Length: 216
Image (cartoon, rainbow, N blue to C red; front, side, top):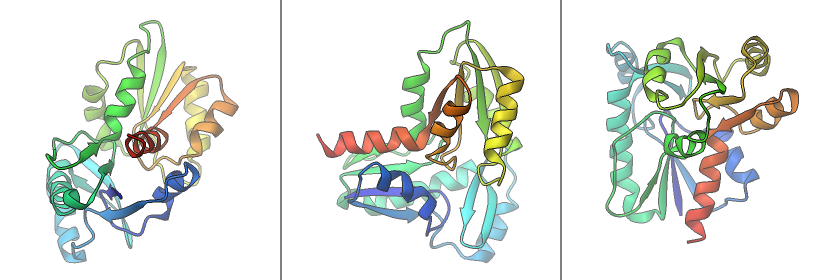
């Protein structure tokens, strides 16, 4: 059994699509905020902090500071580590949570392995979900060589593809990094079909990593 952790609340059918398309069937999805009341969420949204994460809730969306989400994720890992062949945290932020009992899969690590091949002469656009993440994205992707543009485009926007293409036409990148797990699985094909660039999406890479773990 593979345990998938969303940093918000379940259900999230949009996050399961990638695994179903990829042929992964033995999984369960758990929300880091599933047991958190609306009153508590309203309080968490008001907590100050430099790095905020975009989370999807049962009744909407919210931006909550990284430290709070990380603690919630750690609690879920402890709860499910004994009954999981692996745990995948479906978020592109960098967490320090570990486990001695099962393998933890972080999308950011899978993407960083891929983008290490980007050259100093290349141009890359990094799309983040909210403007509050632009600053932390500069630090997160500092090791990526070449010319970089960090642009906020909300993954739940009805015009997300058009907004991405508009930025691509403006900067003419060799590479596109979708720095949020919420960017749809099918966006990669749509982007690469419309423009000549290589697109890196967390959903694709996590599905492949999960399949690799299941085949070990």
